[in-house]
Amino acid sequence: MRDHPDTKLIIIDTLQRIREVGGEKYSYASDYEIVTQVKQFADQHNICVMLVHHTRKQAAEDCFETISGTNGLLGAADGAFIMHKDKRTDSNAILDVVGRDQQDQRLRLLFDNDRCLWQLTGSETELWKDPPDPLLETVAGLVTMDAPEWTGSASELIDGLDGIDVQPNVLTRRLNVGADRLWNEYSIRYESSRSHAGRTIKLTLGNSHA
Image 1 (cartoon, rainbow, N blue to C red):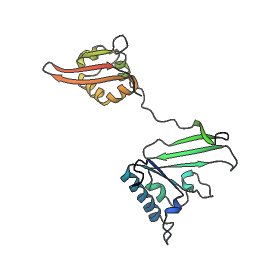
Image 2: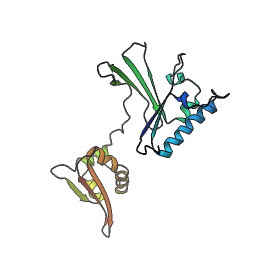
Image 3: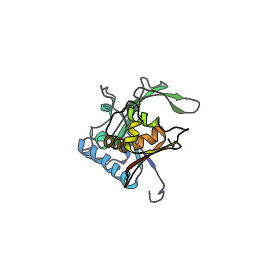
Image 4: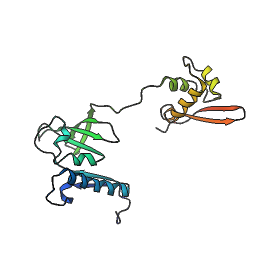
């Protein structure tokens, strides 16, 4: 890292090459400690460190239980990927994904022999998305290309929303919470300001950056 400070990814192939050989080689404590040290190094330098490790031959109901060693390895890591095939010669594979900052997923892969690359062919678990919010959808309907800006009070905004029956303070609170979503999904910038006349809401249609 001192020689290459712009490094963003380090791959260690395999984990065993950096482990100390000792009497507690396969204990939960030693497994947890080695991954913890690597994670601390990654966090310190703000990089990603990928540890390549083996699975054991014994089958298990949960594929992550086939990771060689104890649960300490997975317990200390931010996430894990397990790639497995029915047969060694198969060109189809499954990549199972778990982690603290990502949805559990099962990805289906196909090996492209001409390009020597694995290609994604499908996903059994779609990434989680927020369910539709009727309030945000209705608010978004007020701001269009023909009328790219709306300004008024919370009460005036409620009067213009068909089928939405909320109190002005509740509307303002929900818009404050949903401001990022209003921009990311509808490209509408929400602003709220206070003056002697009261609180004013401003909705402006902008260019999506998603």
